Length: 379
Image (cartoon, rainbow, N blue to C red; front, side, top):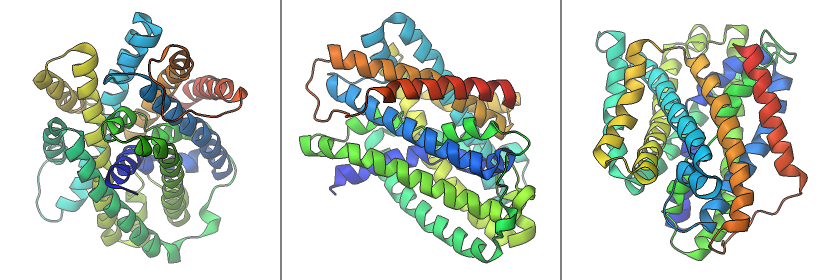
């Protein structure tokens, strides 16, 4: 695997694995393990195909665009307006979720050392990552590779520490208080298509583009494996005492040292996604709406902080709402783009998705029905 492939895989995996991981244990307790595993299987297949669809759209289209630009190019102004809303609401909402949980983790690490008001921990998390948004995808991808490597290492440590305390009796097999809450949180945690246009810029050689479809599948499988390992470790230890952000509920069982380790792991994961999603929003505004670069950096950086200071601080609610809104809206648009690009795309792609005819219709059905049920019964 060459340098571009490694950076591409790290960028996609780092985008997928983020704040959603820390909401998963609580969501699994609320929805039940068996139903949550069904959601993982169903949504894992759907979202992996959507990543592959969007990859083919990018390969068929000349120029540099983001989802907003592709929607305008292939579907028209109405689709551009719809995706603009989804992109801004979804990315700002995701950045807000990263800011909430990242600040909480930083507070866990710093509170034994220095006493400052809680909001300052969130500002201290936000400041360096918001500055890095302006530096471009190659620098961010290299940071992503380093932090993703650290993420796997710390993940293994957490599992080894938690393993002796895991009890299968703590795993809730049957549906719990909210069977649908896991749908939105899992959907949020699997989405990584924001990184696809960014990764296109990393690949110059045909063989790299031919190989990346396998990397998309590998990244999805690795993310699901990480999620299940982390979630089952947390729930297996804390059971019904699992907290919404996963870590606080472990303190009575594993001690503050493990909580600090988990907080450090969280900062790595959340920082990764903050950079990629912030860069995606910035580039969408610049390339698809011709917003000046400085202003686009300001919007991507300041919008989540503004919402946090206004009082939007409920982590699970933000995760679920963003997952459902973005998953349904952008997922359906990507399916439509996939078919339109096959008819109107100007380039012969290095890779074409091979799939049964029923798969796109199945994806639409899952997103619409599952998202509607989650919205109706989770809020």
